[in-house]
Length: 419
Image 1 (tube, one colour):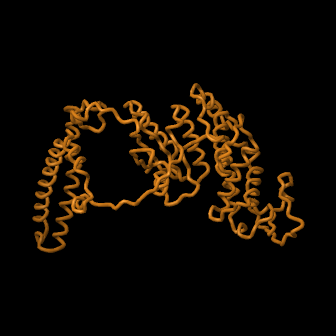
Image 2 (cartoon, rainbow, N blue to C red):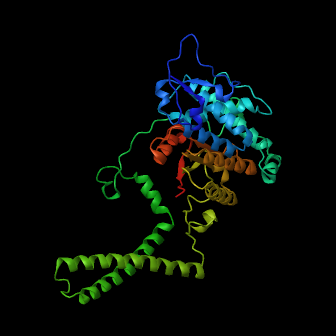
Image 3 (cartoon, rainbow, N blue to C red):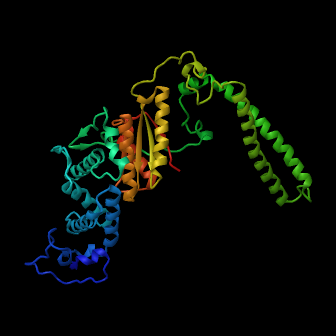
């Protein structure tokens, strides 16, 4: 199949004919667009190349490439995608065009300091690392500065923190792979754990009993239960007296039951607010989760006090995102990082931003926000970012993929949600 290049720009005129084997259609970049002819396989002809062309333009605009180069680069990227031998029908025209841009842009605008690729890396990995190195080089050097603020950004971030650690000719935004299997675990409710032999070990239960907050928690829960149940029962009795049949029909019984449940729900919020108010006004709660005093708050037994946190007991703070507001997401993560630094426990935590964003403008903002964050706090090696190419099972699949690839490097994991 031979298709004129005008079809890429949205023109409805498409010509198709059999191309002679001895005279293939020219596809060189130096041929004028009006005379360029592309040889397109039949299975690729049904793809939406107009959408791929538009997405390439949006990608270049978000990247800050000069507007005069947009049409030429987008057209060349579409041509490379059409001629690519490693065609993936499941990915589609948009993914193939953007992948072609990843190889085209470093060729058009070389990095300021080239790094030799590793011989052990595969071709696909070299392309990905090469483009990531090019993106960071363009960001730090201000090659595509789009204003005074962007032009000053490289000088602000370079400072004395150096550069990101190189790896295999590029920059690594995730830790080394350490794959492990994920065996599904049967979910047992707490009521059936002991009867099914799935309860916690005896040593764990004994350790829980030694914690200082256990007795205090039991007393507080008992008081709250009494204060919620008694008013709910009294209010339900008044509701029975108000009804015409005084609970003599099934409908009135259902009304009373729902009224009691909703009244108890409101009572829980009321008494929680009252107790919280007097706790804040009267004294500081030594068992509050926001306390930063450590063992001095009495929450640990004397046997467990003063024990430092093991160096290998690292925690992964994982934030899966998909087309989320970039500024809000990274502002929240930076607030958590600042709080951990203030508590003196930052070295035990690593941050992971797992993106499933498909809009080029969004993931470019995510990459720039990650690079800016790492550069400002010297966080390369403990603040990581990854965008999946194949988005299976949405956010749950992203988390499962993370656990399979890097889960065994961490003892604990904290799950965050941008929603």
